[in-house]
Length: 98
Image (cartoon, rainbow, N blue to C red; front, top):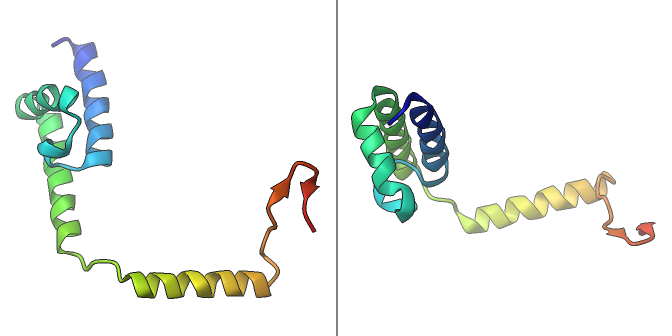
């Protein structure tokens, strides 16, 4: 690999880690092999992968989202925004509907 390819591949690895996390099995198949090799052979890429794997472990250990509480929070936010007149009506082709 050339220095230029390493730099662009590191950028792509960062993007893939941000989107898919540190599990190589969840990476796009077309890129997984190339990026996995990069992560094994390049210290900077290896560090990025370790960081993503650590974040994955933290997220896996965190409590799940309670959908009932999320719906309640959404309802309260909408109710307060509407009451405070922060609600912005949708735009129509003529501008703001009143």
